[in-house]
Amino acid sequence: MRKQIYDEKKGMSYTLHGDYYLPDLVLNEEEPTYGKYGMLRKQFLKEHRSARYQYLLLTGKLNEHLNQTDQEAREQVEMLMKQMEEKRV
Image (cartoon, rainbow, N blue to C red; front, side, top):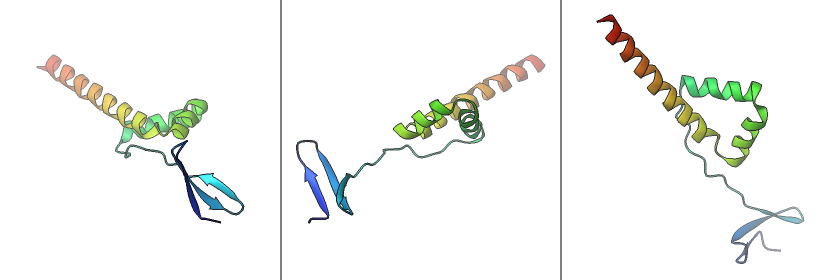
């Protein structure tokens, strides 16, 4: 038996594991570049929104979501700091 096969109809490759051919599945995940706010969001999702966390994790969209959340939170903090600075002056 061959170790790997390619199904042109489905466009997928399969690898032999024991007696079965299993599909070679790869998630295209974005690099995790999130900081403090991304980590806080991840912890919140794990503890309070586990279904949403699992969905994002299984679809490969978790890092993208956390990166976006972190970026938006940093922009909001920056905007608030500027507003507070303007009120002081």
